[in-house]
Each structure stands twice: as C-alpha cells, then as structure tokens.
Image (cartoon, rainbow over all chains, first blue to last red; front, side):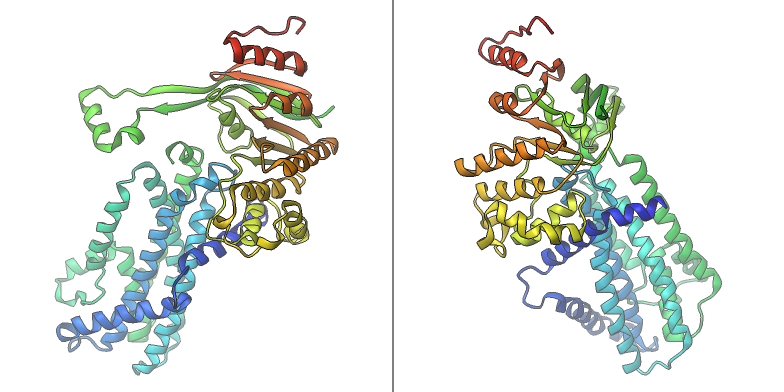
Length: 257
Length: 255
C-alpha cells in the first residue's frame, strides 16, 4: 500500500530521470544506442581472438561460452558502476529537494538493464547461429536475469552509500572489478581446477549467474536446483543489505556530499 | 485557524572533523592514538515558531545565521537533530533556484524534470507547460540547451515553474531578486497573487523591504539562534536594520 503510493507519487520523476540519464549517456555520440550492440560485440571479438587458441579446442561452443560470461559481467559492471556514482552525481538534487534517494540508483539500473536486454537478444541470435540446439531450458535464463536485476540494484545501493562516505571506494571498486572478472571464469573453464577449488567459485555470485546461463543454453538442460537457490540467495542478500543501509542512512547522506 | 507548520525547539547539528573531513587514513591514525575528536556545529539551535494557513513568514538574518539549514528541515531534506517539525500539507521548496537544472538538457526537458522534482504529475505539467514558458518569456528558447540561457533567464524559468504550481506550503529562498526590472515587477505581482490565494509561505531574503511588504510574520535568526519570532513585522524589521548598522540587537519593546 505504502510502496504503491510512493511509486505513484514519484513515477513522473523516475521517468524524467531515466530519460535524462539516457540523454547524458549518449550525448554527442554518433552511434548513440548503437553502442549497446557494438560494444559487447567488439569485446567478444577481442576475447575470441586472444583466448581461442588456449581454450577453444577443449570447450564446445566457445563463442557462446565467452558471450554468456560477457553478457552477465558487462551488465553487472555497468549497473554497479552507474549505481555507485548515482548518489554523488545527483547530490545537487537531493540536497535541494526532498526525494527518495534510491530513485537515482534505480534509474541508473534501468539504462543498464535496457542494454542488458539488447545484448541478451544478440546473444540468443548468436546461440542459433552457432548451432546450439533449441531447448526449453533457454527460458530458464529468466531466473538469473531477474536475480541479477535485484543483485545489481542492491550492490548499487551498497556501493553508492559507501562511495558517499569514502571516496576511496571508487578506486578500490575498479580494482575489485578486474579481480572479479578474472575470478568469474569468463574466458577459461573451471574444469582445470580440483573439485574443492571448483566449489569455491560458487562463492562468487557473478560466477553463479554465468554458470546458470551456460548450463541452460550450451548444455540445454535445466540447471541444478542448488545453483538456482544460490542465485536467488545472493540476490536477496544484496537487495536486503542495500535497502537496510538506505533505510538507516537515508538522512545522513546529505552531510557527506 | 489551521496550523500549517509548527517548529518546536528545532536544532540542527553538523559534525565536522570526523572521517569525511580528515579521510579514512587519518581517522584510523587518530583513533589508534586516541586523538580522535569531532567538533559539533549547531547551525540552528532551539528554533520555535508556528505558521497558520495563509501566513507568510519572512526569515531574516545575516549570512550564516542558519536560514538555509532551517529551510532544509522544513522541506524534509534534513531531519532535525533535536526538536520536532510538524508539516501539514505538501511543501514546494525553492532552494537556491538556479541549481538542480541540467545544463545539457533543453529548456523543455528541464522544465519537466524540475516539475517532477517538485512532485507534480506529467498530466499537470502538460497542462501548465505553455503557461510556464509564457510567464518566463522563454517562448523562443524552448529547445535550447539550458546552459545557453542567461542567468536571468534561468532564474525566470525556475521562478515560473515554482509559482505556477499550487503547493500548500511554498518556500522561497532569495527568489524575488530574479530577473530585470520588468520581470521583478511581474514576479512580485505573482507572489502577491499567490499569497492572496491563501497559501502558506516562507520567504528568505536579504531585502528587508520585501519582508515588510509581503510578510505578516517575521523570524530573525542570528548565528543559529532565534532572536525573535513576531507578528510585528515593521518593528522587527526596524530593529534588524538598526542591527545591520550598529551590530547591536534592540528589539521593539511592546512585544
């Protein structure tokens, strides 16, 4: 009841801010929205050229394998980087007008989500081009997609709050993203590690989401229930912590901007 | 009469010298050495006043008196550290008018964005848009990026958006000093029209003349403290002008 009222009250602001984010993002670019297509494909091409000789022989549908990793990781990176900056970049607004502050993180996530949607569509085009057999399990990727939305939103809230209090977080997170990328098995397979180490990968939420994608699409089977549970758990944990921080610190952000 | 706004012993504190000022490293170093100390700064201390529906409050005081901070407490942007703020109705706060616009967006886009920030609906803005632009005299600039406007034009737009809406409580921070002579006349007229409509308002200004002319109550702040809250606008304004000349506070006697 209360939430629906809030949504109704701030819907217009939400739409206007989302539109603004889009205009700012593609301002003075020739390709504009086209970058949502070109950027992931260029990344994919580079990785394919660099890593094929090491991993392509042992990994079936290596292009799709790479692409799945990139789709998930790019969305995570874009959404959380945008989310992290969202509060500080809009400080001039919420220090003058009383608006719910999570709305800024939300709008940044929307533009990342739209990119993610476009990239995912291209991903499935590649899946068919690469000759993966259609399976009903394809539709199960909606589960990690929904989880990832919540997970990114939560991470955006956590990071934006931390960023307001400690500006160092901006640099730290940049380094952390690089580390995370190497730990997410985007271009290599975890088969080369012993079973114990392979299990450790499951501590990485991003790896879980990528793995879900790969099992559902490349293997064409429903991913195990345990993996699904982990995906949901990480999402709930992230959004829960994020919401809690915002609830507690909502009125303190102002003092730090 | 119905109470629109009530401040009871409102105090707002800023903390300086904690980790946001000295950085994380210095914070840890001082913590370990036991030399970590924060200093408190009370921007507002024990402010109390009551406004009834239709009142226009003039807030006066030198720079750093705590006016802007108090307005932030009124508009709900800040929560008072102590005391209580009761607000009945919607508040439209026009704090530092020029800010909050995006220089790269067009006048039209900025108008809608600002309307959204002030809490209006799209339907309402669709209806009011033409009116706002006409009042701001910016018909020929609608598709121009906001940053290309002169600062007078920018303030005119901000004023127009704010005034053509109908909040229960309107906060005006230095807005009447907007634009050139002709527009100032127009905005002044508009303000009087709004006041006559029974809206509750708070006007913050350095112009004592505006307070005398537009307000029926006055709140004088000095260094975060409440000097006086009174109905005797002219008396207090006289004292304030005397204070600006001599630096001494002599309140009107009969109060």
